[in-house]
Image 1 (cartoon, rainbow, N blue to C red):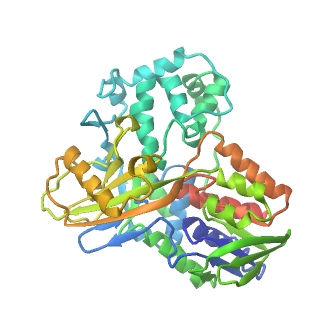
Image 2: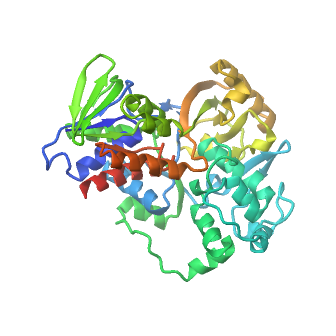
Image 3: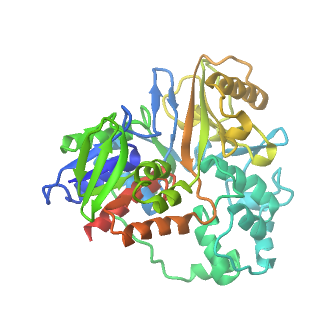
Length: 472
């Protein structure tokens, strides 16, 4: 008997892979999925009407790499292929990505030719960044912030105007704190092994490709042939976790909603007792925890305070999400994915996604404004209201995009401690946590965004990886 803690994408994916690998059926095991709320899907939530879709969390998925192929294979297996809406490489949402600097929107280069042109706010063509890397001396480090690494190798402008806003968009974090291994592990290794990124890149060209190869589903093959940039699900991305939820139900997984666990008691290497807030106890042989690291820390702190402290040391940030719909026949925006705001601009917003360009079947203009992140408390305090965030979002949209119309509909949500921050030393910390579990022979596996990547593809692949480890 096994239990999955958390009904977000990580927990649902864990159930999916346990079933696919026959760990349940072949061993005649019973599987629980325990979710503390009334909803499965985690931060993926869609509000769908006849005129618009508001995504309150993630909205698009990247198809690239092994983890991208893995997700596409899952989506086809769940019967969602016909609902997939792709954005190809030549679509405005793929080509047009902007940053807001010095009270102006600036289009970032999207082609090879663009790196040879001087594009504001950069003072030189981006090709000069590579020349800067060649001139820089070698510096041995175990880890570094992504900001320091990029500034050292490619210059301050690249760090400020390219990488810092990108980190805001990916994890709502501060590039000066986030580990370079979070996004540029290969480039960092090239520097450490070969003395520079360009040198490492040149050497890698002649190195045999040893990457794993996954069998391509028809959907994954189509994504490659058609050169998808990103994709989403028609009718709202929430259809994805809903399909996973239904798959688990159809395969007799015992899904218990509104079930909040307050303590985990490890009896021995094959027995765990889960005590919920109603005083009930569930005894299982193994746990797959997909809940945030800080939540798991609260459940194990009595027996394993050292483990709990390491779990708590993984920081999380809060993000405000303001969805806006403008019921105008003429679009109010230039076709693009949206724009991000570098932290040096000291803005209350992280960026804006142009959903009516990125998400199909939208009438009018639909925007999503992201606020706070690493700076949420600094900008808004502890008692900010949704109405205040709405007012700030509308004001910023009016100022930056010159939109004077009043939104015809809106939704505001504060996602408390929603995104983990992979700060310097994160991967060593996660290794220490997993080594503790191994040394103590605790029957628990860790999956989800707290440990192995914050994106949708990362979370799904994390579940697959942990399940396959248990098969060995």
